[in-house]
Length: 594
Image 1: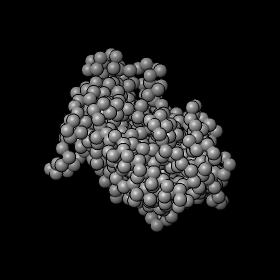
Image 2 (image 1 turned 120 degrees about the horizontal axis):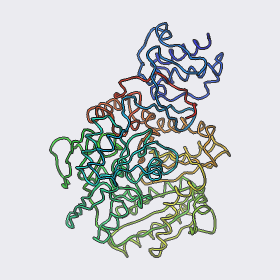
Image 3 (image 1 turned 180 degrees about the vertical axis):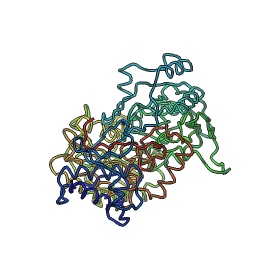
C-alpha cells in the first residue's frame, strides 16, 4: 500500500509543479511513456499512477492542493486496479482508441439515449425512409474510412433541407441527444464517426446546386454535394473548383469546409478561408445562421463564417456554401521528376516559384518508399521513369492561358534544373492520359498504404527545410518494424508522414507518439495541416496552440453549443469539456479492454 501512496505522491508532485517538464503533457492528458523505470514503484503502482494522473487531469484538479487532502479524497480498489472517488458511484462507458499510452474516452453522462418516442418524432418530421436503423448501413456509417475508429450509433438521420435539420437539432438539444455530422466519411482523424452512440446526421441528401454566376464565378450549393460532381459541373461551365483532393469521388463540400481541407492546389488558389465567400449553418438549438453572402467584400462586423470553417461540426452544421471558383484555363502542363536528395527538392521548389511564377499550380513530392508502395499495390500503375528507382520524386503542374508560352516556360525551367543537377530524370506529360497517370501516382498513395496493412498517419505543417528530417528520425526510431513513408504538398509545407506496418502494434506507436508531436512543436509546426483534430488529436492540441487560445475555443463552444451535443469528444480537449457537469466516478486504466 505504501507503493500506492508513493504513486499518488508522484502524481501530486507532477500536478503541482507548474514548471515541471511534464506539465504540458499532463495538461493534455497524455501519459508519459516508460513509467516502469520509476523505482521503487511496482507495475501495479504504476497502474495507479496512470489512473490518478488521468483522473485528476480529467476532472480539472490542476490547482495546488495539500497532499493529505489529495490522498484522503481517494481509495484504491485492489481487485479492479482502478481509482475510485469516495462519492456515489454510477456506471460510465469508456472507449479506448490507439495505443496503451492514449487516454480513455469517457461517455458524457449528461447525454440521453435514443428511445421509441424519439424515433416516432424523427419519423414524423422526416418520413420513415430517412430514419435509418438498418444494421448494414449503420455499420458503414459507424466506421471511418481507415477502419481505425468505430462507434456504436443505432440511428442515422438523413435530412433533405435546412428546415428538417433545424428541427432535428432543436429536438436533440432539448433531449440532450449527442449527434455527429457526417458527409462523405473520408476523414482520417475520427472526426466524422460516433465515439459512442451519438445520432449520425448525414448530409448526403442535401446535394443540390442552388446557383452559379457565370460572370463572378460564384457557386452556391448545399453541403452534401460531392466534390467531384461540383468539379464536373464547373468544368462544363468553363470553371474549376479551387479545391481538389484525392478523395473527391466521395467527400462532400460541407465536410471539406468543416475541416478546412487543403488539397493539391492550395499553392495556387489558397485555403478555403479565402475562397469561401459565405455559408449557412444550423446551431445546436436549431437556429439557422444565414451568412450565405456572395460578395468578395463585406466589412460589416465580425466575419463569423470563419468560425465554422475548420470547426469540424463542433459549433454548428454547415448546410449551404458559396464559393469563388476560378475560370478554367486552357494550358495545363505536368512534369514528373526525380531528385537524388531532399535538398534538391527544396532548391527545385525555390526555383519553380521564381521561374514559373503565377502559372505554378501544384508542387508535390514523394519519397522512394511511397513510389514502391504505389507500384506494388495499385493495379495498372507504371513508373514514368523506369530506368531507376530514385530517392525522391516531384510532380509539378502549371496552369495558364497561353499554351505555347507556358510549355516553353516549363521546358526552359526543366532544362535549367537538369543542367544544375537538381533533377536526375524527368518526363513531361504529352496528353491528358499521361497527365492523369502522373497524378494517379500521387493521389494513389493513401490507397496503396491501406492495401499494405496498418498505417499510422500524421498530417503536419512544418518549415520546408525541416520536413524530411522528421521522416528520417521516425525511420530511425521504428527501425525494421515498419516502413516509414513521406510525401505531401511541398509547395505549402505540408508533410504526410505515414508509418506502415503489417498490423497495429503499440510497440511501434510508442516509438512514434508523443515524439512526432513534440518534434513538430519544437520546430514550431502544426500537428494538423489539413485533416483536422477530430478524436485522434483533440488531446494533442496544446502542441500547436497556447492554453489561452484553447480556453477561448472552449468558451466559444460553450456559447454556441451549451449542452455540448455537437460532435462531442472532438477538437476540444476533454480537460476543458465544460459540458461534463456530472463528473465521472471511475477512471479505468488506459490499457483496459473494451
